[in-house]
Structure formats: C-alpha cells, structure tokens
Image 1 (tube, rainbow, N blue to C red):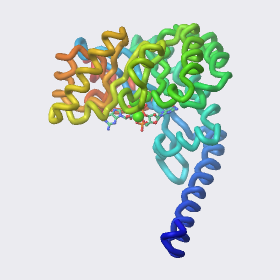
Image 2 (image 1 turned 180 degrees about the horizontal axis):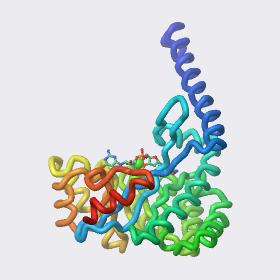
Image 3 (image 1 turned 120 degrees about the horizontal axis):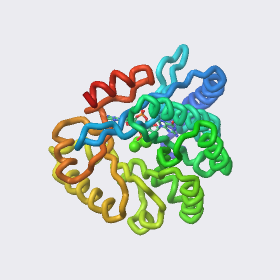
Length: 277
Ligand code: C2E
Ligand code: CA
Ligand code: CA
Ligand code: CA
C-alpha cells in the first residue's frame, strides 16, 4: 500500500477501518438481537418432483432488525461465526427447527428438517450433548434431522471431521453436504465422509437449460452421487425446464423458488396446499 503513495495508503486504511467498524457494529447488534429475540426461522420446502409431495423443509434464519430492517444471513452469519456468537444462535436454531418439525409431523406435512451448521458449531464439543438433549426433549426421530455441512468446513482437518461425523451418525441423524461442487473436496474424500445426502449447488442449476456445460456437470454429479449411494437434492430450482432436466436425470428431490421461497411458519399450510394440491 505504501508504494501506491500517501493518499492511497490513507484511503486503504480508512476502508479497512470502516469495514472493521461495521463488523464491530453488527457484532454488538447481534448480541442485542439474540437477547431481544429478533431472529426468526423461515422454511423452504423440498419436493419430490415425481409425485409433488413435500419431503421436508430447510430452516433458514432471518434477522429483522428494529431499525435497520432485514439483514441477510450472508451478511451476519460470517460475523456470528468469527465472534463465536454462532454457537448460541445455532443452538436456538436447533431447538426451534426441531420443534417446528414436530409440529409439522402432527399435521402430516413433509417430515425432514434440514439445518445449516456453521464450521464453529460443527467443531464445538457441545454439539453432541446439545443434539442429544434436543432429540430427547422434542421426541423427534433423529433420522429426520438432516445436518447440512459444507466442503470447506470438512476439509481443514479431514480426520477430525470424519470422527465428528461418525459421532453425529451414532446419534441417528443424517448428514448432507451443502453447496456441493463449489468447494475443494476431492472425490476420494467424499467417499470417506459418512454422508447421506448431497445437495447440488444452485450455481450448476441456474443456467440450465441454456448452458450445456452445466447440464453435463449436473448429470455427472447425479451419476456420482448414485454410485456413492447418496440421496440428492437440487438447490435453486426456478423453472419447469430445470425440473424436466432433473427428472430425466433421476434427481428426485428439489428445492427452489419454482415451488416456494422460504416462508414463515404461519404461511406453511397455504404453501403446502398450493404444492400438494
Ligand atoms: P444455503 O444453505 O445455501 O441456503 C440456500 C439459499 O438459497 C437461501 O438463502 C435460500 O433462500 C436461497 N434460495 C433457495 N431457493 C432459491 C432459488 O430458487 N433461487 C435463488 N436465487 N435463491 C434461492 P438465504 O436464506 O439468504 O441464506 C443464505 C445462506 O446463509 C445459506 O445458504 C446458509 O449458508 C446461511 N444460513 C441461513 N440460515 C442459517 C442458519 O440457521 N445457520 C447457519 N449456520 N447458516 C445459515
Ligand atoms: Ca443449506
Ligand atoms: Ca446450499
Ligand atoms: Ca450457499
């Protein structure tokens, strides 16, 4: 930065300062938000496209800040992660989403619940006892809990990750690899991870059917998942053409705006009726 001259140096420094200030501000607001329960979960359905039945929901966190309004998870999750606040927030997400899944089961609505874990939560030693408590108290069948992990959180310490994944599997929960194809995991690692579900990232789906490369990659991912005995979920499905492509290629479960955006719990019944007729 020095070589660029005095002005640039100060500019660069100010920018850093502004970013740091914003982070600090959000961190502080996060603490208040957790205390004042400003968070809510929205749920997006996962649909079997062969019979149009909802097989489950993904829980997605929403922050309605009293003065700033909606703050996207992509903006505050990384800060919650860096500060460790994610552990408390993630604990709330687990309780809330499993209680939700039990309410849905009573109504005979789609039964699985997909929950995003952050790297910090995944590595935290309190995760296993927490899950034991959640499963015991809510009475949920553990196999209905689908924990979503990303490649990047598994690749740092591969051996440690495999061990933690086996401990989670011992509780009976299912494990998904989220955003598949965007990270760095090689196929040989994929085989060693005790995974149940592979979620094809939206970036491969979004330009189908215009992009023939993406169609080939998606077809290859599907074939590979089937070889490895993994269930599949295609993310970010927005069009009929994409549904047709996935049907032909035997990817049965999809999630995306084509069927529904994530919605709050009070809108679930209406959404279920629209999809399942
Ligand atoms: P993700 O896990 O990959 O979640 C899917 C994101 O894609 C969601 O964004 C969802 O609203 C959006 N989406 C779903 N279908 C479509 C579609 O058809 N088109 C488009 N354009 N987008 C679609 P959202 O809710 O903003 O969440 C962003 C990310 O924040 C999530 O990505 C996840 O990584 C993280 N996140 C959300 N909730 C939680 C949580 O409770 N805990 C943790 N650790 N992370 C969370
Ligand atoms: Ca996810
Ligand atoms: Ca995803
Ligand atoms: Ca994502």
